Image (cartoon, rainbow, N blue to C red; front, side):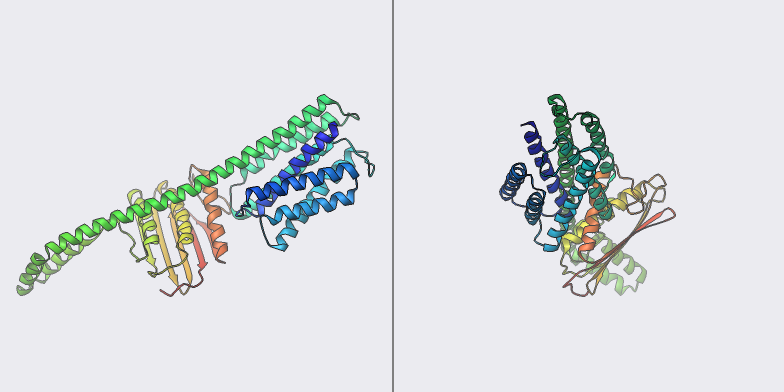
Length: 419
């Protein structure tokens, strides 16, 4: 009975690991909860029941392969991806089981063995899943240091489990409770870890939405200021024309030019750095560039965009993440320099940001040179940028030159009109 209870618990934990492994490679897919629960229950009942009744390795292999495939199909419809993920996890599972059985278990086919070793197998699989997540996060640019630190949890658990069961040929209830407790601790630690990671991701998305709303608010305020100035200017237009006529009759060119310059300044909106005609991009750029001009000494801006632009949401995500990082890093430097260039021509979007940064700013081979305090959100930001660049078959280059950092991004946008 004790072996059966542990078998059920380890199978449940194994399915949790399978689901986690699939999510690593399908982060943007969210299956329907009811359908997912139905698949998991069916997988668990068939896997546990058939294994415990028949003890036939080939049957167990087939049931596991089908179960993993069906669970993966909830996240992706690509046959290649389903096969790859199913095969990959099964290789991990078979390898870890083979290692533990060959080292510690006197295994006889078609006969049950001490299920406490199955707990060690599950925790070893957990370590493999963490390594897989670490490698994927590194490719996408996401902060992966916590994954490596958490890897110590299953590794230490394996050592403790080994010391508990290696000398016990019979199943002792005290040892069983201790082993189940360790399995529960591992589950809770990594359940809370994933919950925290999802919470940070939602916080990042909320911050992006807040920035977008602030950008719209800034743009609305700018438009209201502009409308107010135009109404005042229109009211005084007759007086301005009369003054210009007097200066023209007097052939006073200098005074005429000076008066025209004053009229031009009266119509200039100080907070409006960009006016391409595209409200969504202009609002975001004006919001961040206004903040930049408040804290930095030099801000050079060059924007060349058509009024009609598709894919503005993705463009704003890339611009906001790169520009926010550049402003924050530059504000910590002595030079306080920022150069921003954005253009779209013949479907090719080119973004170039160059900023100064202090030597104290963090650096990495494949990440921003940043002084941000919220490193976790910083990781999500870079991950978002890389994901969007890859989506449009583009290129992202991050380079350090002395005390200057430069980010260059090229996106190939389909169905975009020439500027």
